[in-house]
Length: 535
Image 1 (cartoon, helix red, strand yellow):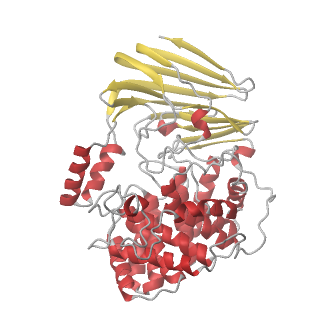
Image 2: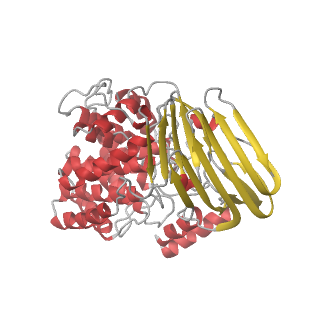
Image 3: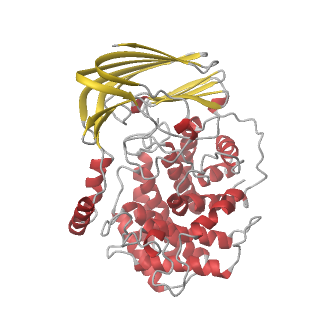
């Protein structure tokens, strides 16, 4: 199920690694640094590639040409030594800027390097000292906004404990774990910059499930089940997942967490696993558009860890258990805290992101038939007003088959990289270190500046049609245009190509308006859109 995809993508990942043993950068997994030389430091988060190499060496599966090849083992070990060489004094690492002291590269890379070390039977006190220093850093720092990163730090700390065998690590890890489990929504999701996101929640699932697999800590079983219960609603009938309706717009899904939960007997996880990964060789497979950085990041080693767990599953895992995913039966479920509505009526499956201003996707007879991403107003000098922004300020009203969202458009100023800007960032990062991360998040991710442009969106769901009524009011004349699928919120693992980008959604423009009422009716059987405008 997973092997074809791994074997297809593994050569791409190996090309990212400096495999020349005489190179000064031997073991560096950032090709932009060691080969292309367009970056003057190495992005440590990419050292996770070392775990991919170790698993390719260690896990036997059909077609694995890398299995037990000594040179692959040597390359994997080289990634650990290079990781140690780029560690900062406090045990943290850089991802995007020198002296950044980033949380994600520190958490994800410690987990990967500890796994390489113990899987390959390495013995080196200098490496153990580096692990200890990074574990100390993670035990003292908390990521408040991106919970997948905080969960990765917990798994990293436990993995470092299995190597170092020092009790203070478990104590620090348990403090983090107890805290974050209290913050899980009763609906099953962990927050990602103010809301629920599907791709990043799959990373959280991967990391928490991996922690369970290593520790057998029963207190995380129920949180894991709640995550699956939530995630199953966002697997689409066309074998895609996630998208613009969620907080960070992601459209990928890591398999390892599903495999762990399937091994533990969770039927929803098994149904999701069978649907998403059974046919990775087909045209337009939903993970094919992921960029090379994220294959080197956590994607490919998640596949390999899933393969490993298939090999130790309690019994044969076969399709046909009879479990139905939400798009396969009549249902309507509104997740109030997440602001997400999922509805199945006959051959229609629809998801509405109310917390994203009423962004919606519709599927009919297993194909995406319609999507609507709200509106934008270009205000000049890179400033854009948009109503498809994650916001807690929207007023949401829900009743069966209908959702109403009211609020103000958000103002976003697009940033362009320039020599002066990048030089300034270098200077700031050299002076303030990891404080630069909070500043950049406020500028490009956590933007919360409202305009005086008001909107109200009403969406009615019927078995044969979808009706969207929009009211827009502006104190001054504006040029209103329908938004496309590209979010204005910066997400590193976002904006991957999806078939929805060329799908059926409105591209209309409405110039010179101040008050406008737009009704858009999409007829499912004919695929036609009928639009009425009252200016």
